[in-house]
Length: 288
Image 1: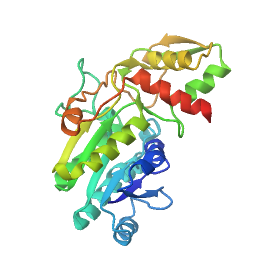
Image 2 (image 1 turned 180 degrees about the horizontal axis):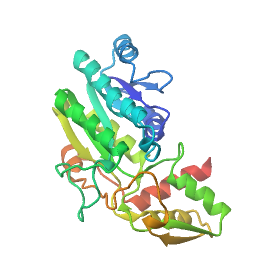
Image 3 (image 1 turned 90 degrees about the vertical axis):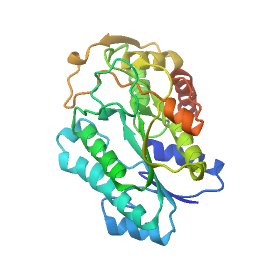
Image 4 (image 1 turned 120 degrees about the vertical axis):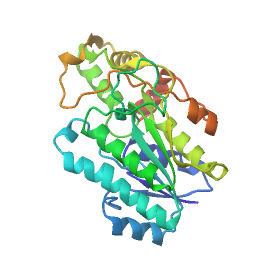
């Protein structure tokens, strides 16, 4: 199987590349935006045809939540036009798609974990553009699945874990938001889930099905930061603050825990607790 990974320089794309040798039946093409601009249909189609691409894992996205409020056109271009181009190409080639989406399609007003069937109501530009991308895939009837995830971090790239590790070494105290609840997700775990699902794809016929994937458990950003300091044995004291004390351009969901029952049942995916997975990631970062 020839598999194209778009957005290959991001956290998830980098994690997929790091484990790709464990999947010898797949031939991978790792494409950054400099190699393939998914917003350029001709460029994308040419690459897919020339390399006989059977499947695409779309890790490419505009993910800067606050900047999206100002760079609306760019967010729409990548998250909507780019996805429409992927759909159009795969419709022609009868290829498969795994598309990565987000918990930001919800408004965070739930009090129990969100199921795939729950009503969406994004609060900002990022969430709205990602939801529109989902809708394009669902309406297309191509062989695709959408995986919504949350609070992604990794040993690669810039993310909350790396920021906390850096600040923990620079400061004695640090204020972190304690009234937003979700689940940190190790991109390495999500990478394995994506490739395991793709390995078993022939057993299932999925037309625009949506799945939720994050690590298990629940945390606030304060809990997350506290765990990072503890696991890294850092003396920095983390102090809880409220969302109103840390204003941002984009409004975040107050609650975005995802129900993972569907992905576990359909694909026999096993999922680690967020703290256990965080411990693995910090050990990898420390070795670098």
